[in-house]
Structures are given as C-alpha cells and as structure tokens.
Length: 195
Image (tube, rainbow, N blue to C red):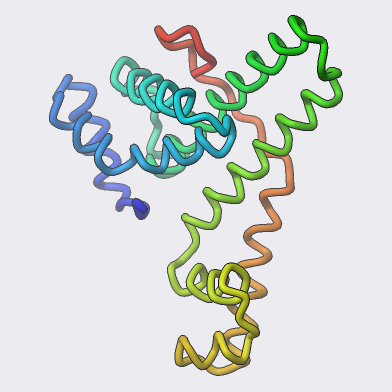
C-alpha cells in the first residue's frame, strides 16, 4: 500500500513527468500500480478490465502530466480519482452494452450496480488512506471479528482509545456512502476513456 507522499515529492514527480523522464513513470507505477489495479478491480470485478484500466490511467498520466495540480491535493488521491472515474465509465459502458444486447438488466439496475461499485471503491480507498493506527483497529475489530476489549488488549491501547479509533474509522468510512463531489473532468486521453 502506498502512503501519501509529501507535497514536495508530488511536485517533483510532476516536473519529472513533464520533462518526459521514463524513470519517473516507472517510479510512479511502482508506487501506485497496486492502488490503481485494486480500485479498478473493485469496480469492475474483472482482472483483465482492471489490467486495462491500469494501463489507461498510467498512459493518461504520461501523456498529460500537467493535468495534476498539487494545489488541489496529493498525487495519490488524484490518481485514485482518475482510476475510479475511468473504471466507473467502463462499467457503465459494458453494462449498457450488456443491457442492449441481452436486455437482462434495466437502466435502474445498471445505475444501482454502478453506485454499488463506486461506493465500494471509495470505501477501499478511504480504508487504505486512513492512518495505520485507525486502520489496524478497524481490521482487528471488523475483519478479524474482535470485540473492542480484545482489540484494545492486542494493540496495547486503553478501551476508551480503542472505541475512539473505531468511531473515527467508521465516520471516515461512512463518507464512502456520500456521492463524490464532482470536479471538472480532465480532457479525454488517447485511450478514448473519460480520463
């Protein structure tokens, strides 16, 4: 899992990409490819589609390094946003094609599937972006089914601190249920997607 880089790293990376440094793209890929692939896979539930979206996202970044503005946030969040937007676009397109060909789903079912996938991808991103202390507490309590007392004991925390971390983590995750704030979309990349 890649942690957010300092803003200085983001600016330097953008400058290196703008100069056309292939090594910069490789470094960026090494740092964020697993994030991009996991978001894409979470939305699409398809390995091949996630691989294709990963290539499209990094292709877009290579061709449009100036699309990232460090004033708007960190590069990790920007890349996650690009990925989510591209994956949801591809999901809509593939599901709409399935409806057109087979008529198996209605437009309402299609939008429900897109919303569900979008929410799951946001929740994954929020979970991986939260501080490791909060993430560890949530993972013990919910994924490993520990009660807060046992979680506190395993992490060496007070019960009050454990409850505070759980509340904070759940509050952070609850934002995944809110629709994302719309931001201006970057211009289309060469891949023909919405990037």
